[in-house]
Length: 494
Figure 1 (cartoon, rainbow, N blue to C red):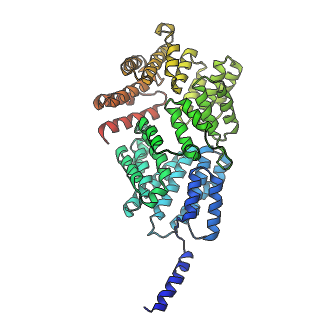
Figure 2: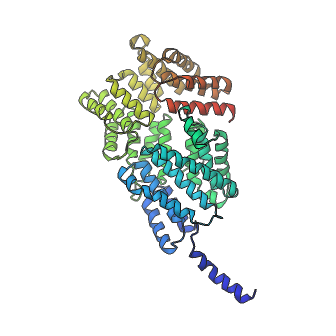
Figure 3: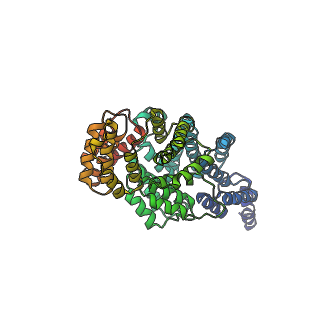
């Protein structure tokens, strides 16, 4: 081949390639992706639109558009947006399939789009469509990992999905069998850890997203809560300017009885314009304030309900708002919130179902036990225990309240690190509550399992996890079963 021909190839080959669909995660796309992950969606969108004009055949900007839709629909749940944007899923999948099959991004981008839409569809009650999208994502992520073993991001998606597949509650086993979804917790976590340890450019690009998945799964499935908070501190995650990490940290704090820290994190985040507007901040602040019996809770919960357009956790927030008024003696407002619990929101989340059950019962919680519960949820263990110790089992005539009393004592001793006292109260709870519809006995069994697992007694821990699974027809059945199954898997090393 002559020098002249080679020169012509060097000049014109890139031009010819630009005319074909391709995946180019260039610096502009990387900058846009980072902005989107930090929930600075407008900035990300601006960069993507400029990149589309520069290179209309680069498919990565259209792939990243799906992230923008995902975050807005997942966090804000606007039904009108969902109806208007549903068609974008199929169009984007078609575009991704037109990219070169030799590129790992051909399968990877489609897997992510299916995964994100599965999560969105669950939010809007399209559970069957969500299941099939989850299956397609699961298969494509596995195929991507097998066909492109050097492409590390494939392990991020397949690892996260394998963990979820390994803990599907028994009530949904028929669905996982039908869809052919199988996985193990240990196998999925190994994939995620391998990805986080990788130092290649692709791994560094998707690292923040992988950290988000990894920490949530470690917290809820791996039950490694202390390790999760150590990771956040040791890696100095930006919980001020990266709003996705802000949400992650604050939400985990609320669910780990650290309400004071949750308030600190939310109030300290970057409030500059340009971040996605999220009513969920009001919900989180409302919960954190309520868990210390602070009067500001009603303001934040009310503002969330005014601004939020979705269905998930609406019943739960209404229940919590009714408690604010109930504890303050404002029964007209409390009763009004209760009626709204039966009218608004969905009943798909365990917390929403429990709120609906309470509203339908017509009964209000015992104020002493309710205050103890809220303070315990917030991590104010000594304060709660001081209030509860002024009472004894004889002060509660109702069998459910007697059972809750022992359960609350167990949780408070547990929070204070007094394991033996906690186990004793948990055993009393299991004995009294095994035949009740309330969740106290099942959760008590789960908590004893956690204690023995911490002590290294995996055989005894597994026994209590199984006792949790064996209890039927109680509140929070699916979520407690998933945690118990994860505990058994951990004890078996699966």
